Length: 212
Image 1 (cartoon, rainbow, N blue to C red):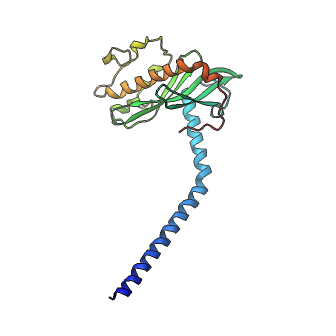
Image 2: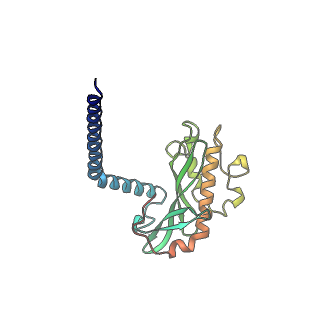
Image 3: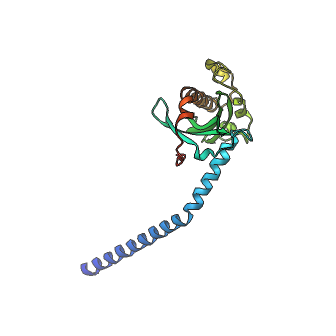
């Protein structure tokens, strides 16, 4: 094959591959446009479901997704706080916390009433070992329900740990790191709420706020 014929063949392949790339990009863009609204609706539904899991039935009558504020923690990271109200009166708040577990970050959603008492905690994301660390999921174990009704004074702050560390919360056989991470995350969340309680309810709502 001559050099000229080879160059022509290479050029043809390049153009062909380019066209395939353009068609693939166009198809992806079209699919994104078509499913965009459905994806947003599904995300909203999932978030609303998660919020309800950490709040008692009838606890609030406002739209939590439209009554949210962003605040900064001591480490500079932002926290999106959803505020629960009943008849326009502040009743509590829901926000996300996280801590490093055995295999990755353990992320949880926690609800606290206006007086600083725990309403509920649910783990929403983790990579812990099945059969051991995954007992933090309420569907597999009731351990997470032990946070209900707790506050920074009940138990005292120094007792916010697993029993192996001198705290009051149970650990799992063969998986102490995971419950330790959840207790740490929740304790830090309670401290964040205590330190920002006034600003949480005083700051104007960011109606366009979206979980990140």
